[in-house]
Length: 302
Image 1 (cartoon, rainbow, N blue to C red):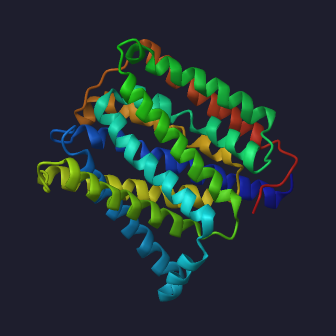
Image 2: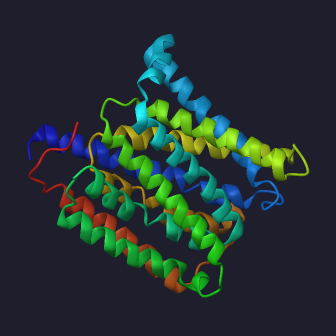
Protein backbone atom coordinates (compact mmCIF):
# COMPACT_ATOMS: atom_id res chain seq x y z
CA UNK A 1 0.00 0.00 0.00
CA UNK A 2 1.34 3.42 -0.93
CA UNK A 3 1.89 6.20 1.60
CA UNK A 4 -1.14 8.06 0.22
CA UNK A 5 -3.38 4.99 0.56
CA UNK A 6 -2.14 4.45 4.11
CA UNK A 7 -3.05 8.03 4.91
CA UNK A 8 -6.56 7.81 3.47
CA UNK A 9 -7.21 4.52 5.24
CA UNK A 10 -6.11 6.07 8.52
CA UNK A 11 -8.48 8.98 7.95
CA UNK A 12 -11.39 6.62 7.33
CA UNK A 13 -10.48 4.57 10.38
CA UNK A 14 -10.40 7.61 12.69
CA UNK A 15 -13.62 9.11 11.31
CA UNK A 16 -15.63 5.89 11.67
CA UNK A 17 -14.23 5.16 15.12
CA UNK A 18 -15.04 8.70 16.28
CA UNK A 19 -18.61 8.44 14.97
CA UNK A 20 -19.24 5.33 17.03
CA UNK A 21 -17.78 6.91 20.16
CA UNK A 22 -19.99 9.99 19.81
CA UNK A 23 -23.10 7.88 19.24
CA UNK A 24 -22.34 5.80 22.31
CA UNK A 25 -23.53 8.68 24.49
CA UNK A 26 -27.00 8.36 22.95
CA UNK A 27 -27.88 5.34 25.13
CA UNK A 28 -27.48 7.09 28.51
CA UNK A 29 -29.17 10.19 27.07
CA UNK A 30 -32.34 8.20 26.31
CA UNK A 31 -32.22 6.69 29.80
CA UNK A 32 -32.81 10.17 31.29
CA UNK A 33 -36.16 10.56 29.51
CA UNK A 34 -39.26 11.18 31.63
CA UNK A 35 -41.99 8.58 30.89
CA UNK A 36 -39.95 7.27 27.98
CA UNK A 37 -42.62 4.94 26.56
CA UNK A 38 -45.11 7.81 26.39
CA UNK A 39 -43.01 10.35 24.50
CA UNK A 40 -41.08 8.36 21.88
CA UNK A 41 -42.67 10.16 18.92
CA UNK A 42 -42.31 13.61 20.53
CA UNK A 43 -38.65 12.86 21.23
CA UNK A 44 -38.11 11.70 17.64
CA UNK A 45 -39.75 14.84 16.26
CA UNK A 46 -37.32 17.17 18.03
CA UNK A 47 -34.33 14.94 17.38
CA UNK A 48 -35.08 14.74 13.66
CA UNK A 49 -35.37 18.52 13.41
CA UNK A 50 -32.02 19.00 15.18
CA UNK A 51 -30.26 16.47 12.94
CA UNK A 52 -31.59 18.16 9.80
CA UNK A 53 -30.66 21.60 11.14
CA UNK A 54 -27.08 20.58 11.95
CA UNK A 55 -26.59 19.19 8.46
CA UNK A 56 -28.11 22.30 6.88
CA UNK A 57 -25.68 24.50 8.84
CA UNK A 58 -22.80 22.25 7.82
CA UNK A 59 -23.72 22.44 4.14
CA UNK A 60 -24.25 26.18 4.33
CA UNK A 61 -20.79 26.57 5.84
CA UNK A 62 -19.15 24.30 3.26
CA UNK A 63 -21.01 25.24 0.09
CA UNK A 64 -22.71 28.53 0.75
CA UNK A 65 -26.27 29.33 -0.21
CA UNK A 66 -25.98 27.26 -3.38
CA UNK A 67 -26.14 24.07 -1.31
CA UNK A 68 -29.88 23.80 -2.08
CA UNK A 69 -28.97 22.58 -5.58
CA UNK A 70 -27.96 19.31 -3.90
CA UNK A 71 -31.63 18.43 -3.46
CA UNK A 72 -31.96 18.22 -7.24
CA UNK A 73 -29.24 15.57 -7.33
CA UNK A 74 -30.47 13.29 -4.56
CA UNK A 75 -31.95 10.63 -6.82
CA UNK A 76 -33.32 7.23 -5.85
CA UNK A 77 -30.22 6.24 -3.85
CA UNK A 78 -30.48 9.35 -1.69
CA UNK A 79 -34.18 8.90 -1.09
CA UNK A 80 -33.75 5.24 -0.19
CA UNK A 81 -30.84 6.03 2.10
CA UNK A 82 -32.82 8.82 3.77
CA UNK A 83 -35.79 6.55 4.44
CA UNK A 84 -33.51 3.79 5.73
CA UNK A 85 -31.76 6.18 8.09
CA UNK A 86 -35.06 7.65 9.29
CA UNK A 87 -36.21 4.10 10.11
CA UNK A 88 -32.99 3.55 12.06
CA UNK A 89 -33.65 6.74 14.05
CA UNK A 90 -37.14 5.56 14.96
CA UNK A 91 -36.39 1.95 15.83
CA UNK A 92 -33.40 2.90 17.99
CA UNK A 93 -35.59 4.96 20.32
CA UNK A 94 -38.27 2.30 20.51
CA UNK A 95 -35.68 -0.40 21.15
CA UNK A 96 -34.07 1.62 23.94
CA UNK A 97 -37.43 2.35 25.61
CA UNK A 98 -38.75 -1.23 25.44
CA UNK A 99 -35.73 -3.21 26.58
CA UNK A 100 -32.24 -2.89 28.03
CA UNK A 101 -29.45 -0.94 26.39
CA UNK A 102 -27.44 -4.15 25.97
CA UNK A 103 -30.19 -5.92 24.00
CA UNK A 104 -30.83 -2.95 21.72
CA UNK A 105 -27.14 -2.34 21.14
CA UNK A 106 -26.62 -6.02 20.45
CA UNK A 107 -29.02 -5.95 17.53
CA UNK A 108 -27.71 -2.61 16.27
CA UNK A 109 -24.26 -4.17 16.35
CA UNK A 110 -25.25 -6.54 13.53
CA UNK A 111 -25.31 -3.64 11.07
CA UNK A 112 -21.84 -4.38 9.61
CA UNK A 113 -23.08 -7.82 8.59
CA UNK A 114 -26.16 -6.39 6.89
CA UNK A 115 -24.10 -3.63 5.27
CA UNK A 116 -21.63 -6.18 3.93
CA UNK A 117 -24.46 -8.41 2.70
CA UNK A 118 -26.27 -5.56 0.93
CA UNK A 119 -23.02 -4.27 -0.59
CA UNK A 120 -22.18 -7.77 -1.82
CA UNK A 121 -25.64 -8.39 -3.32
CA UNK A 122 -26.43 -4.99 -4.81
CA UNK A 123 -23.02 -3.37 -5.33
CA UNK A 124 -20.96 -6.50 -6.06
CA UNK A 125 -18.49 -5.27 -3.43
CA UNK A 126 -16.14 -7.91 -2.11
CA UNK A 127 -15.70 -8.43 1.63
CA UNK A 128 -12.16 -9.34 2.62
CA UNK A 129 -11.37 -12.27 4.89
CA UNK A 130 -10.09 -9.96 7.64
CA UNK A 131 -13.32 -7.99 7.68
CA UNK A 132 -15.44 -11.15 7.55
CA UNK A 133 -13.64 -12.70 10.52
CA UNK A 134 -13.82 -9.47 12.51
CA UNK A 135 -17.56 -9.17 11.79
CA UNK A 136 -18.32 -12.66 13.04
CA UNK A 137 -16.07 -12.32 16.08
CA UNK A 138 -17.74 -9.05 17.00
CA UNK A 139 -21.16 -10.62 16.49
CA UNK A 140 -20.27 -13.31 18.99
CA UNK A 141 -19.09 -10.69 21.46
CA UNK A 142 -22.28 -8.67 21.11
CA UNK A 143 -24.35 -11.81 21.64
CA UNK A 144 -22.56 -12.40 24.93
CA UNK A 145 -23.23 -8.81 25.97
CA UNK A 146 -26.96 -9.24 25.46
CA UNK A 147 -27.26 -12.79 26.78
CA UNK A 148 -28.70 -11.92 30.18
CA UNK A 149 -31.45 -9.83 28.56
CA UNK A 150 -32.15 -12.30 25.77
CA UNK A 151 -33.70 -14.99 27.97
CA UNK A 152 -35.84 -12.37 29.74
CA UNK A 153 -38.29 -12.41 26.81
CA UNK A 154 -37.86 -8.82 25.62
CA UNK A 155 -38.53 -9.92 22.04
CA UNK A 156 -40.19 -6.68 20.94
CA UNK A 157 -37.15 -4.61 21.84
CA UNK A 158 -34.98 -7.15 20.03
CA UNK A 159 -37.08 -6.74 16.89
CA UNK A 160 -36.83 -2.94 17.09
CA UNK A 161 -33.05 -3.25 17.35
CA UNK A 162 -33.00 -5.57 14.32
CA UNK A 163 -34.98 -3.10 12.20
CA UNK A 164 -32.71 -0.28 13.35
CA UNK A 165 -29.71 -2.29 12.19
CA UNK A 166 -31.24 -2.98 8.79
CA UNK A 167 -32.19 0.66 8.31
CA UNK A 168 -28.70 1.84 9.12
CA UNK A 169 -27.18 -0.79 6.83
CA UNK A 170 -29.38 0.43 3.97
CA UNK A 171 -28.14 3.96 4.54
CA UNK A 172 -24.51 2.79 4.69
CA UNK A 173 -24.86 0.87 1.43
CA UNK A 174 -26.53 3.72 -0.46
CA UNK A 175 -23.59 5.97 0.47
CA UNK A 176 -21.53 3.88 -1.97
CA UNK A 177 -24.23 3.10 -4.51
CA UNK A 178 -24.10 6.41 -6.37
CA UNK A 179 -20.84 8.25 -5.53
CA UNK A 180 -22.20 11.55 -6.84
CA UNK A 181 -25.24 11.51 -4.56
CA UNK A 182 -24.98 14.37 -2.03
CA UNK A 183 -24.57 12.34 1.16
CA UNK A 184 -25.28 15.10 3.65
CA UNK A 185 -28.48 16.02 1.85
CA UNK A 186 -29.55 12.41 2.32
CA UNK A 187 -29.13 12.83 6.09
CA UNK A 188 -31.24 15.99 5.99
CA UNK A 189 -33.95 14.00 4.22
CA UNK A 190 -33.72 11.38 6.98
CA UNK A 191 -34.15 13.96 9.73
CA UNK A 192 -37.10 15.61 8.00
CA UNK A 193 -38.71 12.25 7.23
CA UNK A 194 -38.34 11.17 10.85
CA UNK A 195 -39.92 14.40 12.11
CA UNK A 196 -42.81 14.38 9.62
CA UNK A 197 -43.64 10.75 10.37
CA UNK A 198 -43.46 11.50 14.10
CA UNK A 199 -45.96 14.35 13.71
CA UNK A 200 -48.38 11.99 11.97
CA UNK A 201 -48.04 9.41 14.75
CA UNK A 202 -48.48 12.07 17.46
CA UNK A 203 -51.66 13.36 15.85
CA UNK A 204 -53.08 9.86 15.38
CA UNK A 205 -52.09 8.17 18.62
CA UNK A 206 -50.97 10.67 21.26
CA UNK A 207 -53.12 12.35 23.88
CA UNK A 208 -50.77 15.33 24.13
CA UNK A 209 -48.81 17.40 21.64
CA UNK A 210 -46.23 18.47 24.25
CA UNK A 211 -43.68 16.68 26.42
CA UNK A 212 -41.62 17.55 29.52
CA UNK A 213 -38.96 20.21 29.00
CA UNK A 214 -36.29 17.75 30.16
CA UNK A 215 -37.16 15.46 27.27
CA UNK A 216 -36.98 18.36 24.82
CA UNK A 217 -33.45 19.25 25.91
CA UNK A 218 -32.42 15.58 25.86
CA UNK A 219 -33.77 15.08 22.35
CA UNK A 220 -31.95 18.19 21.12
CA UNK A 221 -28.69 17.04 22.69
CA UNK A 222 -29.19 13.56 21.25
CA UNK A 223 -29.87 15.04 17.82
CA UNK A 224 -26.58 16.92 18.06
CA UNK A 225 -24.73 13.68 18.83
CA UNK A 226 -26.43 11.88 15.95
CA UNK A 227 -25.85 14.68 13.43
CA UNK A 228 -22.17 15.06 14.33
CA UNK A 229 -21.56 11.31 14.19
CA UNK A 230 -23.29 11.02 10.82
CA UNK A 231 -21.11 13.77 9.36
CA UNK A 232 -18.00 11.90 10.47
CA UNK A 233 -19.31 8.53 9.25
CA UNK A 234 -20.32 9.94 5.85
CA UNK A 235 -16.89 11.51 5.42
CA UNK A 236 -15.26 8.20 6.30
CA UNK A 237 -17.42 6.27 3.82
CA UNK A 238 -15.27 7.41 0.91
CA UNK A 239 -12.23 5.66 2.34
CA UNK A 240 -13.61 2.34 3.61
CA UNK A 241 -15.92 -0.36 2.15
CA UNK A 242 -19.37 -0.45 3.75
CA UNK A 243 -18.82 -3.46 6.05
CA UNK A 244 -15.52 -2.11 7.31
CA UNK A 245 -16.46 1.41 8.33
CA UNK A 246 -19.64 0.05 9.93
CA UNK A 247 -17.52 -2.42 11.87
CA UNK A 248 -15.49 0.42 13.35
CA UNK A 249 -18.65 2.23 14.43
CA UNK A 250 -19.30 -0.72 16.79
CA UNK A 251 -17.60 1.40 19.41
CA UNK A 252 -21.17 2.69 19.93
CA UNK A 253 -22.06 -0.72 21.36
CA UNK A 254 -19.16 -0.94 23.77
CA UNK A 255 -19.36 2.70 24.83
CA UNK A 256 -23.15 2.68 25.21
CA UNK A 257 -23.06 -0.22 27.65
CA UNK A 258 -20.18 1.31 29.61
CA UNK A 259 -21.81 4.77 29.90
CA UNK A 260 -25.05 3.19 31.14
CA UNK A 261 -23.05 1.23 33.70
CA UNK A 262 -20.53 3.57 35.35
CA UNK A 263 -21.89 5.69 38.23
CA UNK A 264 -20.67 8.92 36.61
CA UNK A 265 -23.83 9.25 34.47
CA UNK A 266 -26.23 7.98 37.14
CA UNK A 267 -27.91 5.31 34.99
CA UNK A 268 -26.33 2.34 36.80
CA UNK A 269 -27.46 -0.35 34.37
CA UNK A 270 -24.93 -2.87 35.65
CA UNK A 271 -23.73 -5.41 33.07
CA UNK A 272 -22.82 -8.94 33.99
CA UNK A 273 -19.40 -10.51 33.67
CA UNK A 274 -20.59 -12.09 30.43
CA UNK A 275 -21.46 -8.66 29.08
CA UNK A 276 -18.00 -7.37 29.97
CA UNK A 277 -16.48 -10.38 28.26
CA UNK A 278 -18.48 -9.62 25.13
CA UNK A 279 -17.25 -6.03 25.16
CA UNK A 280 -13.66 -7.24 25.33
CA UNK A 281 -14.25 -9.54 22.37
CA UNK A 282 -15.57 -6.61 20.33
CA UNK A 283 -12.53 -4.51 21.17
CA UNK A 284 -10.32 -7.41 20.06
CA UNK A 285 -12.29 -7.70 16.81
CA UNK A 286 -11.90 -3.98 16.07
CA UNK A 287 -8.18 -4.19 16.82
CA UNK A 288 -7.88 -7.22 14.54
CA UNK A 289 -9.56 -5.26 11.75
CA UNK A 290 -7.25 -2.28 12.29
CA UNK A 291 -4.17 -4.49 11.96
CA UNK A 292 -5.59 -6.24 8.90
CA UNK A 293 -6.54 -3.00 7.17
CA UNK A 294 -2.96 -1.75 7.35
CA UNK A 295 -1.92 -4.74 5.22
CA UNK A 296 -4.39 -4.21 2.39
CA UNK A 297 -2.96 -4.34 -1.09
CA UNK A 298 -5.77 -2.47 -2.81
CA UNK A 299 -6.40 1.24 -2.42
CA UNK A 300 -9.53 2.56 -0.76
CA UNK A 301 -12.36 3.95 -2.79
CA UNK A 302 -12.15 7.73 -3.02
